[in-house]
Structures are given as C-alpha cells and as structure tokens.
Amino acid sequence: MDIVRKIQSISWCKEPWGAPNISDEAKQLLKECTDITPPELIDDLQEIIRRSNEFPIKFPIDTVRLEKLKTRRPIEKLKENVRSTYPVLHERVLVLMANFLVYKRKYGSTVEKEMYSKMSVVELIDRILHKRAICFMKKQDVYLLRSGKKGEGGWESIGTAEERPPLVLADYLSYDELKLSALVSVSGPTACINDGTRRNSGVVKEDNIETDAIIIGVIGPRFQRPGRVDCEDILITEDQNREENGYGSIPSDGPVTAKQMWRKLWADFYQIPSMTYKQLTSTVQLKGVAARDSRVFTERYARRPRSSDVFDATAYSRRLTLLADTVLIEADARAAAARKPAFVNIIGAGLGVWKISPHQLDLFILTFLQRIHSLLNDGALHNISDVNFAYIKPGDSVLPLFKSNASKTEKKVLLKNEAHPKGGISVQVEDREPSSALVGEHAGKLLVMTYAWDGNAHPGNEFWLGKLATSGDPAAACSTQVSELHSAAVNPAVCGRNARVAASCGLRSLAAAAANLV
Figure 1 (cartoon, rainbow, N blue to C red):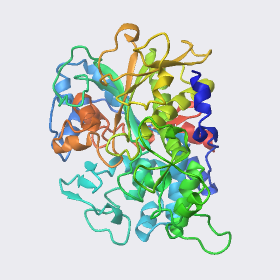
Figure 2 (figure 1 turned 180 degrees about the vertical axis):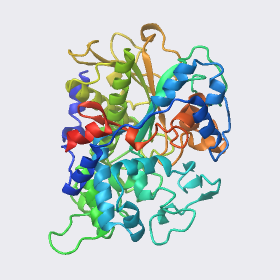
Figure 3 (figure 1 turned 30 degrees about the horizontal axis):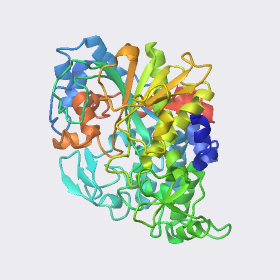
Figure 4 (figure 1 turned 135 degrees about the vertical axis):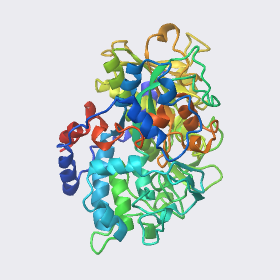
C-alpha cells in the first residue's frame, strides 16, 4: 500500500497551513528578540544540588537526583546534561506569543494589561516556565501550589477582577496562558536509571537499558475542561460555539468584543475560520465516531461518541503538527550533534485521560507520518533513522499501513526519500519501554524519547504527590533527570534566553529564528 498516497487522500491533510500571520505590533516584539544574547550557562553540580534542595516541595524519591547520581555516573556527563537542557518551541508558537501579547495589551482585563504592558516575548517564555503549579490534574483542576497549598478549581478567575490570593496572575498562569504553555517543550540529555516502565517507581535497574538518552517533555491537547484550552479550537459544540462567546464572523463595521478578538487570534493562528455550531451543522453532513475499526479518521468533521459535539480533525492535526515538528526537528539536531542516527521513541500525548474520541489515536499517528514525509521532502531529518510509536494502537483501518508481505509480525513502514542517507525513515509500532536498550540493528543509535507533560505542572506532575505509578509523567520523573533538569526552579538553563526554535530551516536560537521571521 502506498502510504504517502493514502495520507494525501485524507480530507484534513489536503489544505496547506500557510505562513504565520504577523501583525505590525507583533513584528516589533519579534524584532526585539533578535538582540537576545544566550545566557551564561552553569554546570556546577553543587549549585544545581543546592537549588534542588531548596525546592519548596519534598522530592518523593532521591535515586534520580544529582546528589545520588554523582556517586555512580561520570561527572562530566552529568555536567553536560545540566548545560545542554533548554526549552524548545515551534516557530509558529513564537509568532503566536507576540500576537498574544498584542491582544492582551488591547483587550485584556485591567490585571492583564498591567501584567503585559511592557512584557517581552522572552519574559513571557520565562513566565510560562516559572509560574506553574507544582501539580495540576483532573477535570476539577486539582492542584498543589509552590507554597504547598492544595485545592481544586478557581483557576478561571486568575487574571480577572475576581482573582484572589493565592490564585493570582502575579504568581500563577491564567487559563489563557495555559494554551501557550502547552506549546512549549523542554529537551535535554538525561541519565536513565531503569527502563522507564509505568510502575518503575525510581528503583535502580540498569541492566538492558540505555543509560543515557535525550528526553523531551511534550504536552498533548487537553479536553478535560469544556470551553477551555484545546476545546476552544478543536471542538464545535452547541454551548461553546455561539456568537456571544466570540464565534462566527466579525462585523466589518461597529465595535468588536474581547471574546471576538480572542477567537480571531486563534482562528488566524490555525488558519481555520471561527464558526458557530449552527453555521457548521447547517452546511456539513456529519459522521459519528463509533468503533475503533471505523473509517471516521478520514473525515474532517465527526461527532463524538454519544454526543452532539463535533471534532475538527484539521484543527487537531495542526495542533499535533506543532508537537510533531518540534520533536522531529529537535531530535534531528541532537542526533547531528552526537554524530549518531536517532531512534525516536514517541509516546501518546493527550491520548490518556485527556482523550475524548477513539479516532484520536489514528489522527495522532497519521499526523506524524504526514509531517515526517513533508519534512523529508524539505531536506530535513537526515539524522533520524527510526521513529517508533510506543503504546499507541492504531485502528483496524490504519494498522495495515504498517504491515507488509515480508513480515507478518513486524509493524513498520519505510517513508522513502532518496536524499536521506538511509533511503528514508523507518516508522514502526512497537510497545517498547521508553529507555529499554536499543539492540540489534539499533545498537549504538541515539535514543530520543518523549514523555507526556502538563502545561501547568512541574515535570513529574503527580510525582510531587508521591503518586509514582499513575501515568507516564511521574514514570519519567522516576526514571530520568527531568524532575531536576527540566525544572526552571532548579536548572538555570531552562529559561527564555536559552530557548531553541524548531523552524522551517531547522533548529535555531531564539534570536536567529526571530530574525528569520521579520
């Protein structure tokens, strides 16, 4: 089966995502980024250990902390892990941040206008990295704050006239900012103390593992809160998609509302018109999502199971494109620096408790396949040899793409490209543990792995509540160094000035990427 032709025939893959829209005010903010100089990075392990010991919440385990690792791992490698960590974001997100600041200065609340009036893009990235809760989860927004206070709900008031301490914009991200923070990743080399299985609980088991790897924290679409975060852009619902909520076309004459301009910000970003539920359902014939073997993954719009809500596959795919491009371009750059081909292990992001429709798994894999093909055609990804989807099971209509007559057990496909040193990238579906050893034909490759993070939590999320085996986030914090090295409170390298941008021309510094945009 010609996988490329199959992907290109899918309706939501056909419309190209054009160049980002940059207003004049946003362009000025991006110009300011071109003067940013990289920070002076430290690799003093004792300083990182001191900062870790001053972290306000107690670490539930110590086996992954530098204080313990320095006794059994090479010091120079641990230093490299500290200084080689950085935030990474897509170039479209860099533009979005500038447009976000422009919007908030004009249409934000009084609290927001004061906060953002002189804020730069770099300062916004720093804010996203620092002003998080320690733990944030469930549809009730259960949280653990940096002060140690626990609670649930009330996050919607942050940044409004109704905000009350401790949930205030000066100290924590607003719900609007959570949409941005979900688009910022952190990447870095790490020591691995076990294979990263879900219930590893930080127990040291160094047999048959990759003792060193690159790990990237990624955040998938979140649908737990109706009318918030990714629901705003990907779902079309009767309650949400109303004119009073800013949806629909904006009148050419007369005043505009903050809600209308908020919707315009995101409609311009995704380049998808803002529609009311009535507009959509009166013009589009909708198919429901049923069993996992349905062919609904080919549809642009589909109703959610047992619901009147409509799922927009184009919007979802574009949200995932940001994630896929960032991971792939970052992995390619890390492999080039290591002078090794990369084996990229992808776990599901937003495909656990955040998932609201079974066909999301198919869309996730197909979007990655489409982006690998596209980036290969652009002359990129020559340092990636393999991409593996771990614990992501495609439906019966997508799985055949990975099967061949040559092998009845292997589930993989080669995305061919004559310019690639290996003739293309091998993409497979295999349930391997994140940091298990690369053996056979993969021995000696650079392991680049992702883990599912949260846009309003420190790395590990439930880890900080002592819940070590509940999801991939705490599992990663129990098996790698992310709880320390991906934390802006512990590692000074996790800052806006040190950010990298996954751009059309490859991985770039923030200043270089901004210069390319303006």
